[in-house]
Image (cartoon, rainbow, N blue to C red):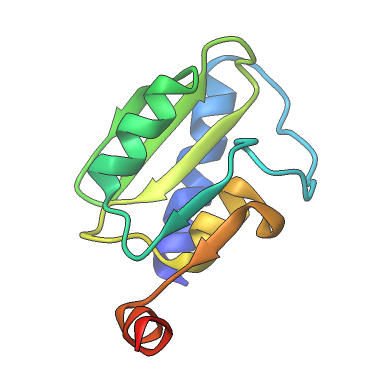
Length: 111
């Protein structure tokens, strides 16, 4: 909860610095790509976002804030951690575009 509050505050400050209104909540995926993964690190996600038109606007020891270069109101805050949660990944790509495969499932399917 503390990290979420910090991310929200970072988000608000970023919009306020540019005198922009906060966007309305929606359930559309941020990236319209299909993805199959076991683990995604913050570095891998950063590279994927940068290939998709986002750039790193702010980074500190807890968060990374990305902004879409074509749509400046479209921002994304990710926690600074070794690997991202499957829930975060499904929110970014949309549930219908995500296949989470953990190692135990892979072993069971190949046997």
